[in-house]
Length: 474
Ligand code: BG6
Image 1 (tube, rainbow, N blue to C red):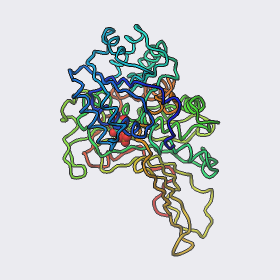
Image 2: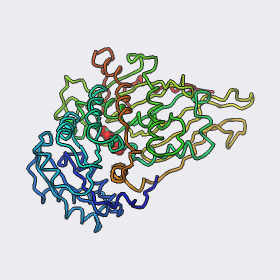
Image 3: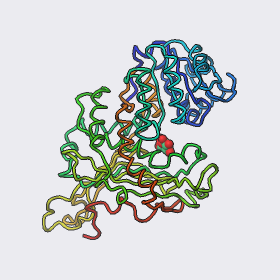
Image 4: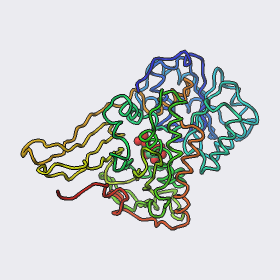
């Protein structure tokens, strides 16, 4: 997807009210995304109001916004204007009188971004439901949406009292990543891949997000989430939905989100056996890319008794005609030896390689990279040298980054009133339903919490190896 010109929608005066404005998410991701978006001229009449419980004044807040905009290279006149008119209001957003005061400082169409922990978000939304919101208000909610299926449902019920579903933008910034969105073009804008993306031809699908970063000072959030909730329950399930869904007739929100919802409703833990088909581990001290990391349990703010995992693996089944019998293997971990951020579709072996062609030892694979953004095809051919000896060639197309960073894309969706790149309410609940048996098994202690040294490839017995059809020797 590319940046479209400003729509009639985005010319309406709008206020972005940022709750949790002094936090890490706002500084690192949201404000840089906003800066890049306003620098394109897409939001000519936007006022930014930041709010938090810290006693900041306008000047301190504007410094924060300026720094975040500058870090994203957004320093033109439009960005400067947003900084100049921006204000900060100190408020406890779970209190009605503070919310009234806050709403009174906003004008035009209102977009409220909840960059808050799930519990505070729920309390703030309940308080807003008691005082009411101006018509047309859009709500943006950061992940995790609730803490389980029950809390997600009750948050959905509160939101439904506030605004219609189309005005709720549950953020999953992976849906703003250009290569994630490009899965749609790869699958539905040519005839090459789609006819073979089914159980007749695919052996397994891996969705992997291995990071070299460790906790990076985020214990307050992460120690309560862990890798499964932080990455798998949210981002990786969204990627799974885009890879597994049937073709939507259009890319409007109703069609696209309907297709995703259908496929996620059919998704469950493989064999309904979370003990066999999930793994959890956490890192011990080690060195990653020349950087010493302490053991996760010794990171400031971590409570070792919580048993939070920093690497999660789970194998899922998508019970549809197209995918029955194909394992979807999801994995994400921190402080690993190398970055690996990709979805890999591994194809079954050909029904028969003619006698005389030798050397078939790797299955064919389609790789969709999420950083670096690239598409790759590992394919067996009888290439150079001995023509009867097979070689695997690696065809690669590199994509530049999208026009906007992911948070710029998702903010644009909310300003334009287009929820296509956000998560629908029922889907948010389903994503919790899918991981619930795994979380239950982990809490019950029936899946051991393993350890791996920071800077290693992770524990040895990954659920991702070997890939079905993977052979050693010819
Ligand atoms: C965030 C997670 O949502 O996504 C982080 O909370 C993770 O733990 C990050 O590092 C990965 O996304 P990106 O866009 O930084 O690659």
